[in-house]
Length: 469
Ligand code: FAD
Image 1 (cartoon, rainbow, N blue to C red):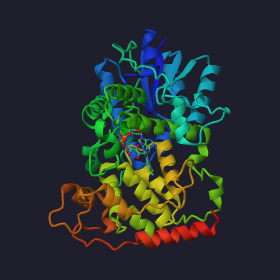
Image 2 (image 1 turned 30 degrees about the vertical axis):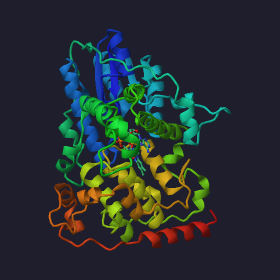
Image 3 (image 1 turned 60 degrees about the horizontal axis):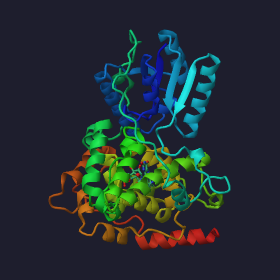
Image 4 (image 1 turned 30 degrees about the horizontal axis):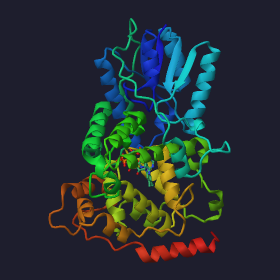
């Protein structure tokens, strides 16, 4: 009987343990993608990007003589219906680790077993399953460095090849049309603005990894901090949707290290930051919804999203150049340099004393590389409420940060049009992207800071001290 291969955030054919296992049985494989409530509930940009990824996967499967079946509804209902229509005897999938997906998968597994259908979940999204990394006392890690030390010398399995053939059933069940799902409907800015920046699919991700290892990894340790340089791998959007596996990145990094490329070790460490974020989400899912450090619950974060200062932050007109450049980069490209992410997050939570959840949600709406674990860890780290976080008194100075990491001003020129006689297309495209009702124009003069670097710092420090942190 056929095996249903339930694709979720694992949109690739190579190094795909579930697909590999299914193909090895020689039984027909029916790939399916389900638009359920969890997919419906994604932020605008991640949902749109997922739609592109699904479309691409569908083409890749067709090239292999297979076919991606698209269905909409509650996962269990869809699977049961498909089982009824195809006589499938098994459902395979790649594990997810966020609490909502885990709840869904647990109940799907239990129901399938009751119906005597084989239900198997596989690894593939992470290198180290969260329950396999334990402290000496048998608990989970709350600090990154010992986590890194625990995993750094582990044997990470070699990536699996793309199946030569994906056995097809005699006939295919019906499929929805992806266009009818309107995955990009909620994109406020036109999808055509962001589209040129998307690196779609498995082969684009592999080329990017290869080019990074050939050209950039050697200088990565320094260049990764420079938003004016294309010095990072740019693989986060592909990792987020499983268009490349962390194992594939890890092995490429190990090879580069063996070849003596200096930045390779730093790259491996960054991949492990991603693992650490998942480790935290798995063991403490509250990281997604509340202060990870509960003593922070006593801190009176301002949660009012309508405040003028917060609106200025979202609309990237705070008058602080690094903050605005980062937020504009995200609005246009769906990505933001890591250094800028840290600076914009620090400014929102410290200078503007706004709840990190406001920023977390804005990123969730705008990023094409949105990842639940890394986003939550990044925001709580920046705010000071997270594990291994920056101490509250470490307030990034967005002005000196820009001087240091954008020494020639290339990043700010790329994104801030105001005041330039001939602004580059990137900076102008921000004004094409924003909704008209924001009333912004490239010809406006650049705003004064809503809160200056020094006033904001002092205000935040006073607030923290009064709370006795
Ligand atoms: P590279 O520098 O090439 O790193 C390689 C890979 O390592 C990345 O693709 C990513 O998977 C992982 N990685 C690197 N840095 C981190 C990090 N700090 N935390 C976790 N994993 C990391 N990353 C996301 O993928 N999705 C998010 O939604 C996200 N939100 C963030 C929010 C905030 C406030 C902050 C401070 C960071 C956030 N990050 C997020 C982490 C980081 O900014 C991005 O992973 C990185 O900028 C992606 O660029 P790259 O692929 O070129 O990274």
